[in-house]
Image 1 (cartoon, rainbow, N blue to C red):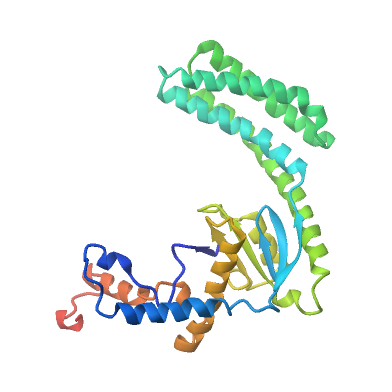
Image 2 (image 1 turned 90 degrees about the horizontal axis):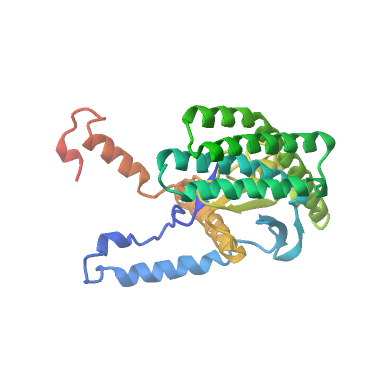
Length: 307
C-alpha cells in the first residue's frame, strides 16, 4: 500500500534539525534557509487547485472541489454489529493468553468473567440486529462456542495453550466470514456514497479526481477504502491519485499534506524530471551508496572517492 505520513513526507527545503540539536549557535545560513522555507510553505497554498476534485475519506466521504460539495456516511449498522461480535473471540484469546502467562494476576479472570457477562447480554440482543438468517446462525455459533470456552476456563481458573489454540482455530472461519460480510456491506455503502457525490462533478472530472484516505498508523495491507478507490479510478492510481495518510484524522491536516504532496510533485518534475522523487528522502540515493560502501557491499573502494 502507498502510505504518506507526516514524518516521511519529503520537503525539498527541509531543515535537518537533529544535526543542530546540541549546538546553540544558529547554522551559518539559517536566515537563507528560513526565507526559502517560507516561500516553499506559501507555494503550498496554491498547489490544490480550485478545480481539483478530492474525495476525502474519514468516517465519512466528503467531495471537495474548492469547497465542500457534500458528505456522505458509508458505514452501516450491520458493519459494526458483525465486527463487534467478531471481537469477542479476539478478546477471549487475549485474556486467556494473559491468564496463561500471569496465572496469579486475578485481573485476567475478571476480564474473562466480564466477557462472559457481555456475551450473555449480546445473546439477548441478537434478535435486534438486522442479520440475515445465515449471519444470525453464524453469530449464534460464535457466541455458543465462546460461552463453552469461557465457562471451561472460569471453572478451571486456568488456561492452557492447547485449549486456546483449539478455540482460536475453530472460530477462525466464522471470523473470516463475518469480515467478508462486513466488507461487502461497507463497500456497498461506500460505492453508493461516491456515486451520489459524483453526480455533482462535471463531465470528465471524476477521471482526474483524487482520493485521500485517512487512518491510523501502520494501516493493514488491503485497507478497504484504499482498495475501493484504486479499483474505481483504475490501474496506476495507487500512490498517484489514491493516497493513504497515516495518523491523520483532521480534515485540514489531511488537505495540508495533500497540498504538500502536490507541490512536491511539481517541484520534483522541474528539478529532477521525475514526478515522485521528492516523496523519497532527498538524501536517500546518496545515503544508500555511502552505507553500501561503508558496510562493504561495494567491494574495496578507494577512500578518496568519498569526500
